[in-house]
Image (cartoon, rainbow, N blue to C red; front, side, top):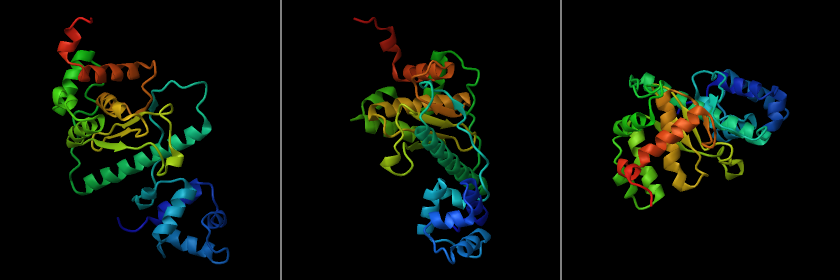
Length: 270
């Protein structure tokens, strides 16, 4: 992975609102020599140990991977918010969701940077191709064909986990990065499915989908398809799948249509 970027180390401290003296105290460094040591890290004169970087990650509220970026990341937002929540989102959920989204953007930037450097940065035509939101039947057919998804084979899997792995493999073979992620590295930072079930980062070179792994395993595949529809629409954002938002309804309908066969739709209910 190489050495941490001194410029990013300084940026992370400053955006966390810490002076060098504040950071030294937070990082449990020697009060006498800590400030000079910290400044030497931020000038590139010394390299912090892995344990020190992990402490910085915790205290600065930044992903460990952030420190290895080639430059400080631009400020990122969640994208569109496709959820309908009660009057206001509890602050603790808001902060942790923002931290998770920042982490995803960092991962995505690192992946994209690597693809560009190795000249493997081919654009994926699928991303944004459905921005005009065609009808549900057409949309589901296009996405199913693009994936090469055999619904019967999907349903024949032994359990929901195996079915998800089958679907995940098909999606990743198309160049979409899929993460099962619902916390900030520890179960104590678990983010409820009431706050988010999925997140889509629409990018033509390195698109990402995040599925909240704290959701029921039976829901993982549906969420993955739902977020894949977001990528097809070219819409980055957070989903909860219980919203009246037009885009959420559309993604739900398309994902459902992919998983239900024509025969089942045409058969009269008993």
